[in-house]
Length: 500
Image 1 (tube, rainbow, N blue to C red):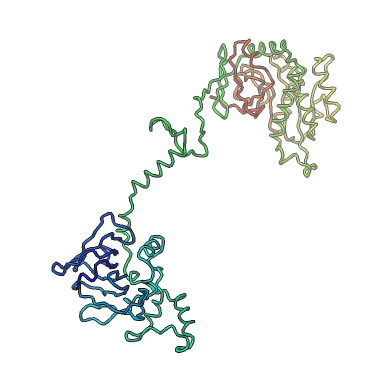
Image 2: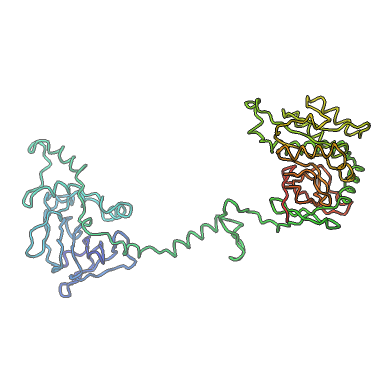
């Protein structure tokens, strides 16, 4: 009797722990109560061993999928450990080997009624064993196709399957089509809890991450060559540079003699101060190479006016919609080169719709540079006064101080100088000093900002916050006076300096 089942395709459910096995019956031992399957599949995956043997005590449910010994018939063995080799054949076969029985028999356990869930439709058995397992890996078990399972489960245990004859049952053909379309029932496996730990144990984390690392190394190409310690990271942050740069040198300017103070820029570059004698020699060499006084005055005026416009509010203040609140700037200039720099700055400010009041005392003879700058300033519409009494009594927006001179300290004893300095200190407006003198001389007007030219001088604390402007001195001119120079300005012409 047991030999009749050899070659048949069966499905053996061994519970949650061992899972479900499917394969071809190779042997059935009634004495030891064992059954062997060759070419087995475990939970839809082909087993690495050619044959698996099961004991009757481990079998929870046994389903016969296809009988290959003789005519093709279907039978289902119900759950529970039971004796093997006593399943009788059921149904009859047609001429083409397709079962014509409409109600395949389920073999229940002893003492239990027949189960409706164990019925298997002929449409399910018509598929080959290989076709069913090709569909299994990509299809969820809970949604595996089971034709007529709904219609079978909705009938009583003793009811026969309705025949496919629409004349007898009145629309039976349409009902069968509905059953095939909407009759997918839920598998019995959904009643049990999913084994998360068992499925997680099947995931080989080390192998997956090794495969990911291998694919990344292949994708990186030349960047992944070399020893593991020398490999550059495959991913970079937004603030990391892919190209390896040289170490940053922050002291890029060296002077032949220390000026007394050192400053640093916002990026950390060190800018040393120079003495007035070295600064004067630098400008003299630059003038010999073509950087004339007129060019320096123009460059200084542009940089100073840009800084002043920023201090006045920049685009927030100087807009076409704000013409009724034009800023007012008072320029205090002396009869020297520093005064000519102030006049040049006032001309550029007046060109930018700033109301400029220029104070310059009357002298019988003035420098040619001042005379030229005054002629240009007179064409801007700015106001020029020679007496402190003509300066505004109300506070202005900004005071630009160009009264001091590096070489002639006796000007501070002049009445016009003291009067102008007193007016600036009493006006309560912020003061910007252009090219102030070195720290050995006391500042008559306390400034909030100071603008140095080219390289800074060692300024006193009363000079306020120090700024540096680029007046266009070439690098080789610095080298001629013994200064190793690298521009600290970057993309700007005026930069702030901080005490180191």
